[in-house]
Amino acid sequence: MTVNRKPRARTALRGGIVAAALAAGVLAAPAAAHAAVEPGHTQGAGEVMRSKNAVLKLQADGNLVLEHVSGGVLWASGTYGNPGATVTFQQDGNLVVYKQDGGEGKGGALWSTGTWGNPGARIDLQSDGNLVIYRQDGSAAWNTATWMTDTTLYAGWQLGVGNWTWSDNAVLAMEQTGKLTIRDREVPGIRFDSHTWGPGAYARMQADGNFVIYKKDGGQGKGGALWSTGTWNNPGARLVFERNGDLVLYKKEVEEVLWRSGTGR
Image (cartoon, rainbow, N blue to C red; front, side, top):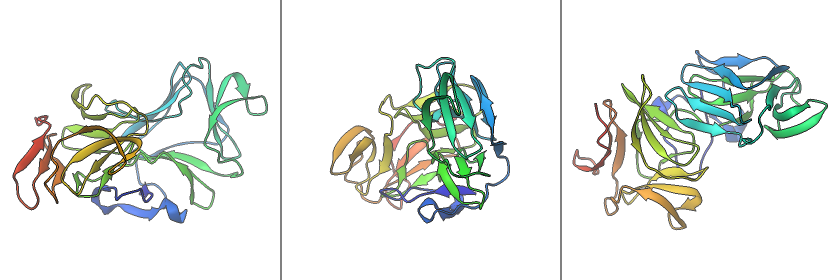
């Protein structure tokens, strides 16, 4: 199942497959096609785990990165600049990136999920692209919030950092670096790039019909816009990621196109 939490504004979630909210502290067990790592596992640079749609890697520079299999970065620990680092899923339920020659009991922690005190926990990389640490009772202790969303965004809905969706041949993602991309599903290649930067940035389908990428602490009425479709004054407009990989903004209740990415194939 997909993990969700209530954001500042409603986030579209694909197919209505959300089972519970993080705010409640309870998540259902993940669906099929997920990958798990056993407690006590330590990994150097390289692939840590992989599921149907995502791969977790520890880069040679020490950064722990979650990528969509199409190539977009969904989440990162921010521990770059530390060659020789390792990642450990500890027996206490904490996922930790240690600097070279560091480790559990030796110090040198660069980053962690802060989920110690949960012996018997497990970490799953779900088929929806979300990396989740589950307590022994099945509730979620931590997650990357990188789940799959719906292919349509209505007024007030958001595409949060690390959220993504797909068409028959392409993947739309709000990447961790702050850019919105459309990538080919089967072969490496970028069809669309917003060329925005700012870790934590997110995209919002506004009630006025404008689709906007805001920096982390920005928002409607607060400023911080990094990019937009320029389609304000069209209340009720909706954004659709079409089956052919084209991202299209339609006028309310009609098929009149206000903006499109031109990436359909």
